[in-house]
Figure 1 (cartoon, rainbow, N blue to C red):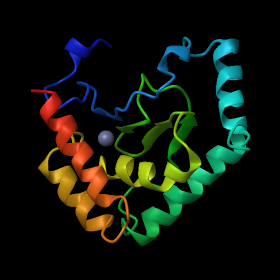
Figure 2: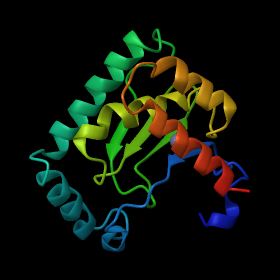
Figure 3: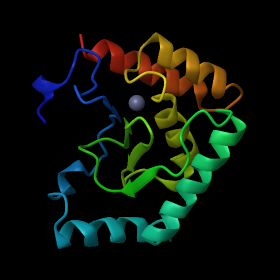
Figure 4: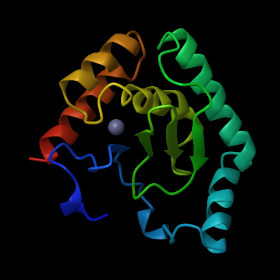
Length: 162
Ligand SMILES: [Zn+2]
């Protein structure tokens, strides 16, 4: 998928939304699926003191908690969730109808898991970072210390694509 194939709102035609922030050491990103790649992901998670399974468990627990407490169970349970390199992004979200799939980059620090998951889950309502997305984020992340920053990033991402 090249930049050109992406829609004007930064999402892909397949409805994949990505939380696109290039990690500082993006150059280290290796091709998906290779053994090198898997080792790289595990080493990166190890820097946070987490195994891949522990990181996934943390993210899934956050998904469940947010789905109950913020989203009133509107998202389908048991998401397909994997930790993988996400095209220079922090995470990506795909609405498969009966299920959602979420990829979280190993570059996403555990301190950002809640913020990242809330962001990705808001894509259930809007694939872009446009007005509907921002309204949902404002509503559900009300009172979170990072909300203002997150909204600023959304505006930047929306503008960038024009
Ligand atoms: Zn996003």
